[in-house]
Structure formats: structure tokens, C-alpha cells
Image 1 (cartoon, rainbow, N blue to C red):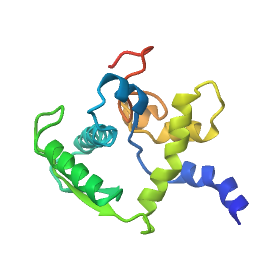
Image 2: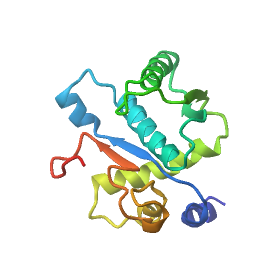
Image 3: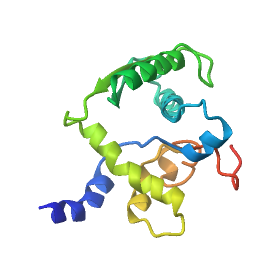
Image 4: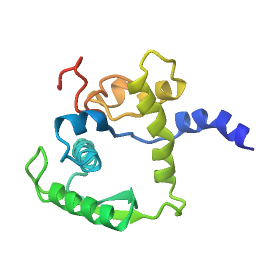
Length: 175
């Protein structure tokens, strides 16, 4: 049964209709540059900003949107919620309030959204760590990322739009 699921997983992702937004954090580089920064807080803020851009494009930016995050522990959850509220209150690149609400989900809950996030995280990370290595799953995901050209250029223009990296790799400049 597991083998069948593994073989079908790329097709499930490929034919599912969703828009992907991700932020990949290089924790080693953050520790070197600024050990006080929290990787989860940075990733949350960057994803929230990209989500707001997507909602703006779809003219849904004034409607309340719930963001589900996986529980990590009482202390961590409280810190993440505080950061979430800061971003919503205007500590974002737009310098405006964002209409988001946070929902914490226990790891035991069967959330299809969180399961999907788990499925896409590894191929995205591997693509960044080992770009020379063939990555069929990432090739499928390319067409799912929120991109600068909308539906007309799926699989293009997603870098630093729907797929962000922090800090930027030394070989690349921020756009």
C-alpha cells in the first residue's frame, strides 16, 4: 500500500488545483549573520506577504483569511502568534494591516493542507540544496508556485515571488 501511494503521489500533486507559496530559510546562514533572528518568524512573515500579494491579485485582499500553522510547543506557539500579530498589524513590507487570522493545528489532526505542506517541503529544500540533482517532484511543483505572470507563465517567474529564499544565496541578488 505504501509503494502504491509513493508512485501515485506525483500525479496527485500534479493534477490537484492549488497555488503554492514557500519560504526556505538557511538556518546556518542566519545563525552566522544574526543569531537573534528566528527562522520560523522570518518564514511566516515572508509567506504572509506573498499570500497578501496573491489575494490582492485575486481582489480578495480585504477579506479575512485564515492561516493554519502546525503546533510546535506552547512557548513556540505563543512567540509565533505574537510575530503573526506584529506582521498583521503592519510590520510587513506593505506597512499596512493584513486581514489574516491564525489557527494552530495539532500535529495529530488530519489536515490535508498541512499534509500537502509536508509533501512539498522536501522537494523544495532538495532543489535548493542540490540543484544539480534530478528532482521530478520539484519539476511538478514549479507549475504550482504563485508567479509574477499569473496563469500565463506557469513554471516561470516564481523565484522570489511564490518561492522565496532567506537569506538570498550569495550567487543571487534579491529582486
